[in-house]
Length: 535
Image (tube, rainbow, N blue to C red):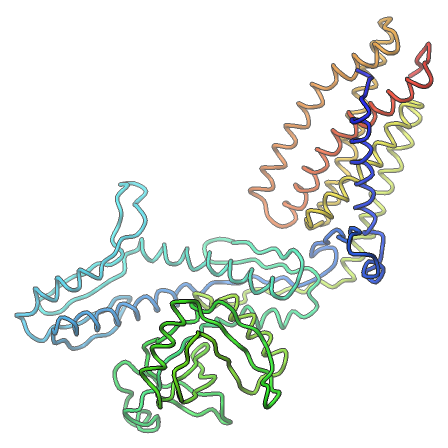
């Protein structure tokens, strides 16, 4: 029907006006936006890597490190389990992807078998049998035991390591304040990182290249580090170097982790009130604070080491119990180093090192050229469509052109509000939706022409034209929208950018082609009351 209630007219006008209001910030400079009041919309369309330049990295998760860490954990578990059962052993170590140990007394073999079987856990169900699988195989040959991680457990740990790495990489990049980074998995153990607008790729590489595994351990005082280097470190200890000194000095550190960095809830850069040097303050969660308090209470007078990525960054002496879970890291930090270290600690430690396989830096000049080319293509296509529609359908063509302008404004507004990244294929998607919006109006107007030729009155021809064209328009756009949704779900990078603009454009084009043009024609018809309709 050509009758619109006042509230419908108001709603359509407000939606159209909102499109222009939220599009306006894209035509203003950053300095101008900063001077505007806070209630004024200030979001601009986010340009992708191919439009504004930035950094591209292809990372590989070193899953072998995850497997080595798993074997080290098994060694510690075997040592602790056999000691608790008071079973003598020898030759505990790793070899060829497995852990081996020999029981000294044959009488303890059965007890050792039972104790080591207790270390076996289960992983996700087998896809074929539907039954859970063991994560560890315990094999006995006389007094010799071999513990081998199963293939299922290795696959599961590698998968989790990659997923956890993606999440931590995302946190670290988000802490940099960049807009809309693209972080996605490629293959089994690779991660693609695209950060538009980042003008310091070396800093990005430094942040992503650090594992940032923070641990708090006790310094072993059974012998000096020099004695351990001359002979061999006692069991359960290792030699690490402290960067507190120049040159770095060796320290004998217990392997047992008293408190881990996973218990940190916050880390912030700050300044020492006495020396005014940059420091990093940290806060543990409840369980971490409790363990940290117990360790410091039971070891007053002993030095403990704060270890970051196998380097001792501090080795203070525990003067008194540290309760409340708060502390700080100090050293020869610059302001940026302290800030970057705080970012790493807040984001969490990577489960495995990341190797940079490929690095590309896209200059802003290429982005500017791409934007300019996209603008020219869009303007030429837009102008050609407007001229053609106006010449073909007269006044109704003018209505369609006004709706087309509203459509472009709504697309830009939606991209600004959603902060969706606009890529060069995304611009192609916008140009495509412009053609689709006009196509809907062509269907409607041709249907109206057909009804006029069949002798219908102008008002009946318009109503029938809109009603009967609606089914065709909806069918065509719904199928295209489904394709856009599939592209968004399965695609990546530029493909997703294309699908976003295409999906948004479909929604706005249906609204403008069917609702906005119908409203303009209804208002014109109400005031002009034409006896004949020339179309």
